[in-house]
Length: 395
Image (cartoon, rainbow, N blue to C red; front, side):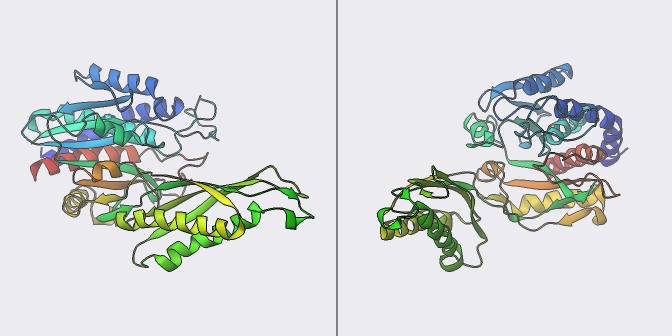
């Protein structure tokens, strides 16, 4: 039996077991950097297979395990944390944790990588290189578990040559995958702005410095940064998602207004330039009205860049394993992912796994209380990632 057929057979063998892993993880989600029970669950599965995981990484809950041997090392990554969302549904594996849910599919990613471990462990004598499996905490919360795992040396000893990760994608049906080379996902920064004026009676505007009015002009002014300063060939988004006053009423102008938002792009030089432009624009508008501003730009994840050569090899493996009809070319996305930190250090490929049922069900978007998957996707997931790892090791 050739290696592809062996992996297909093993994906059949372990499919139900991986469904069990996923349902357990889904029922017992934990928030970012609090995944202690999740980490214990993963480590026990690995040890029960005779493997020797390294625990306590990335802030305390990250795990790695190496399979195979050889001079080269490639890495596979899954994230393990959940979101602060109350799940809606009646399925048997619904979250048991109030207000916490695997609404972004990290239970799928983790269960899938565990399934890949089972497969690779069975073919370990035939692996062309060492495969490092990374179970990473804290993808959903800055500064991102990936940055902490890298700081703890997850890409070293021995040096990792390249890394591959996957993410659920409800816009694709189960059995299909999507991929894109080069710039794939945007950087992501958080904006916290406080406009400070002078409150007073709304009927006496001559005696106040109105932070509501100033904030309105700030919001409009910020939009001109992208539309009038940015290169139209560089995708960028600057959005204010939250505005609220400190005090205020129908007849009271408050002293302060707080704005919160996000800036996303694909170009690091432009990203730095926007930081300066935002401060200039906000302070200039405030000065013109006699107001002041506190500006806090929290630098988030960098852009996720899929290495062109690695991605070409991954796509070739996808076509071999799934066939041309089941591999989709994806556009860039303005969403962000902390897998981007790995892509800044070593050549990387991050691809999307179709999770919706062919009949159109299970299509709820990620980060919603009804997100779920067609579990046949897990069979595709574990077989394909195992095949990708094997083929990349052969290159």
